[in-house]
Length: 107
Image (tube, rainbow, N blue to C red; front, side, top):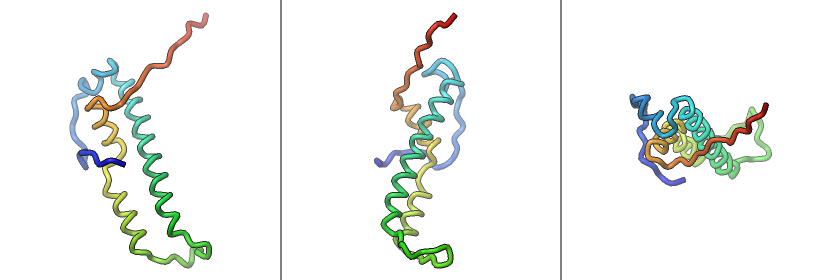
């Protein structure tokens, strides 16, 4: 995953600025939610893949071995910006492509 400049903590934002691209704050929130969920799932998949290398078939809940590399990988992901902050930064920079679902007039 490429490195993005994203604030590590919460930033106060103007609701009008977030609503501007979609014309509706609720639609903007849905776009942000869906993108944050995509980012979260991708990070989880990447972390799981990296940690599988350390999986031992004989490990049980009682025998957990501390592995320095495994701990460093986990700490790296903990230091990453939260998915919602990344999604907001992408949205503000116009990096998210979204479209409205077509509605059929059913009568």
